[in-house]
Image 1: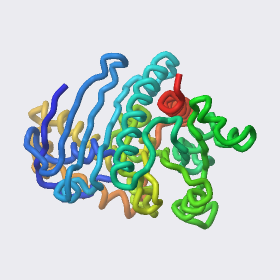
Image 2: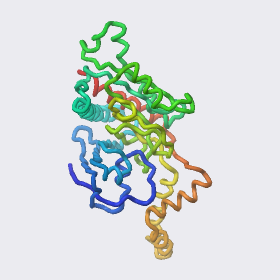
Image 3: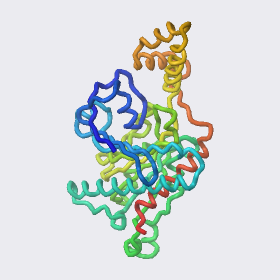
Image 4: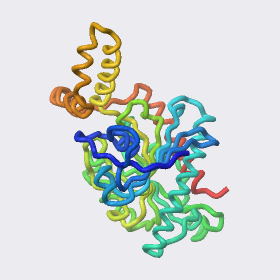
Length: 341
């Protein structure tokens, strides 16, 4: 395990990614520090999953990272894209541990600031929101997670108030609000009505994210206590789902399922540069391209691609199977965190 702080200037070009880890990686150079941001990395002894915790501590960190203050925990599990039930079970157990930890942290903060309830699952009413479009496969993660959940809120209605508490069950409900093209309403507008009627203590939002690196598609899970900003990673900004906007704490869980075409081309160009630099005959060409900074290369690629193809995003060919597997992994992580054994 290693702990350190980062301090660099933010790069000139916009890296379209929902992952705080990739936003941190976009800063040039190694070592150094970003004022107002702390970083911790370690590997789980039980699952072998790599974990990276980025904490944005103050306004300086917010300005540097372009993200709100809070904790961003990233789980990187390279084998998660494969169909291995035992491995997915290990990941879900690891995920449950960190969902529980963030839930406890959020509810303790709520108690201090608003006099809310404790973080014990049996004391909480929890609303799980599956963001996204069920009919667009890369965006269907949230709805499919909710479909796999064991909801319990209706049991109190059927068998009397206190049924769940007596059995040490969380009062768990779920909703798939759809997208604006389907409903004509912002997700935040729908959730405000649901929250007003059901009065949950905590909202868990599940969403598909955009990544900067193709190797993170389907293999990375990000948890954050800052809420969620639907569509921000692909430049489609919607109303935020946060404590300030909804009135309840929001824990967000996301998995990247798409990557920008410009990012793929940029990575390919770097590979071409390395290949050209090996040969004496082509080294001059590689030197010319290499003389451009990384942000200049990326900006040039976007300028060439986007007028022709628009903001093109790419998803893996096996995304349907990946979404199916991940939806079970995340739902089991939620169950493991919230249901007492």
